[in-house]
Image (cartoon, rainbow, N blue to C red):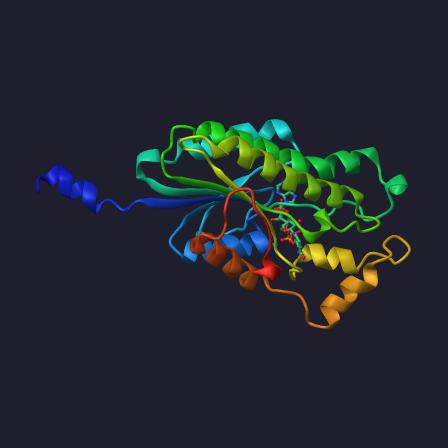
Length: 255
Ligand SMILES: NC(=O)c1ccc[n+]([C@@H]2O[C@H](COP(=O)([O-])OP(=O)(O)OC[C@H]3O[C@@H](n4cnc5c(N)ncnc54)[C@H](OP(=O)(O)O)[C@@H]3O)[C@@H](O)[C@H]2O)c1
């Protein structure tokens, strides 16, 4: 074997995960798990964890639509399509929004929550497809949705609407990509009830603003919350099991 070929076969192909909201909560759990499994992990969030060298961190406020393209373009400029075997995007960043009935919520908060939870994943998916168009490796997008997509909780109008929206986003784009030679696979995942800041916000909302608050206090008091680490392991196992067929909307609790 000549030197060139030897070099070629020795080259280790990179598995890449781009994740939004890797700075805390479920996203941090997923980022750590994929890193442990040998992935190059790239996170996009507003804040940055200091002295954390396990993965690359890009700062971006996903509510500012115009700031998404420069960041994702920059990330792709540092990737090598000839040296990548697996390219995954996880739309994980999310915001519960103000918890209250819709008449009590400001227009600015309505717009912000929809931008983070729905507009940003749509933009990221669009750019991911465009920028990886000629990539021949395995390409997939998971979006962290929620049971709130199908269960109407009073005082969560933006959250429920945006999660219902990302599920439809997944179904439509999965169809668009299906017939393409190097298409991207799209899946929505309901992670269950996870012990993160989002749950703290939900159970600390005054009862007069959130009728279902006791349900969330009970999850916590009865020890029903899953850890980000457990959920990250479930997601990774599903990813590698081949069960995540494009177009699927999957509730982790039913797997
Ligand atoms: N926790 C649950 O029980 C539960 C259940 C079902 C679904 N989920 C979903 O799981 C995902 C993760 O939620 P979590 O529970 O881990 O919440 P979390 O602890 O509040 O974390 C949210 C993550 O999103 C990022 N983020 C929020 N707003 C952002 C913005 N404007 N720009 C960029 N990044 C932003 C945050 O990073 P920065 O603050 O650094 O920007 C953080 O990393 C969400 O999509 C959520 O809807 C959670």
